[in-house]
Length: 110
Image (cartoon, rainbow, N blue to C red; front, side, top):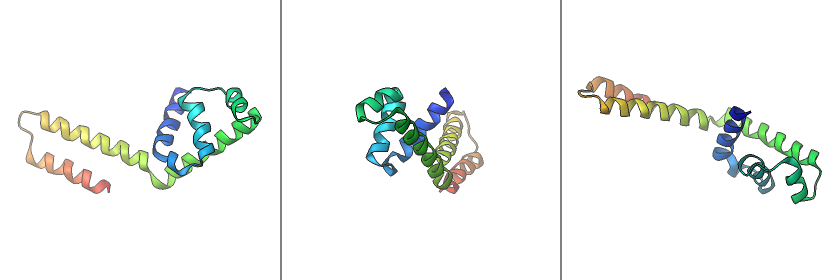
């Protein structure tokens, strides 16, 4: 469950601006503020099932956005390459060739 929550939080961070205000609110309350489905339903005066359906549809939309735009995948790859560059810079005598290779990999991401 924690892995799913972490993934949805990443998806929400990257793609929340593509959601409707209602979707943003439901997702924020459920995943960030830890509200229950019942609490959200009570606040919006809708059924618990309506909240559940909206959250599930929104999760699917977020996964679809990632499938097309790959922002999280690119972020993770960029982070890994930056860690590699930092490790090379910490080395006593990093090879110029290794540094150039790392920079070229970063450039190729975009």
